[in-house]
Image (tube, rainbow, N blue to C red):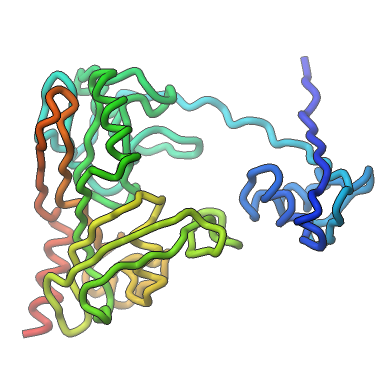
Length: 313
């Protein structure tokens, strides 16, 4: 039995007069610019009943009609052990784990690797059932290519109270990043909005219409070719540190997605960005007492740092 595709129509607001079709779709229907262009290129967009290409211009009051893509298949949690994931704290309300590189926080469409949720399930842990089905108990995330500390809610009160702390920006999230070159000033704040990259759907960028994003950094140690920074996040946007440091012209060493030098990464034996969540502090959801946890660098990052340090002597 087949089902007809969902088609949505909206009048173009006067404020979008003269915009390209793909830009208008992105603004009106909430798609990325890349996805909007794909829909137009595949003949799934029309203006006042006539097919429209991605580069055509819209005018206020016209009806923009889009054949919506099919929803992604539901993801499921696979209980699978995660090699190298360390649980450093466990009580009735929270788990604090050290996530290794190459592991996602939770399942998502297209991801076939291991996850923190799946690893905890394989180890027999029960976590909060709050949140979307595929990310229950997850109150914050780390990139697949970033290692370090994460807190996971075990109880429902922990989920609610931790989520509120993240919204209120009272959680102390500290990272260490080895970045190319030497930031000037050596300590400072990057306050620049972050949104979807205009042409690469898998990337993020500093954009005028992005969400407010604030990153504070302090120099720990300077080397000949790089600098080791202590970074505190005031906000928690996807890829925030990587985007901000790249926009500041000092990408994380090894971060080829955001402009790092591939020759340096190869020489240091890095296959990912040099970025680790070293400290995590929050008010415990049970009694409000402040608790804090720390994590040392994993071997690949420590080895790369040793080489950079030796080069500078």
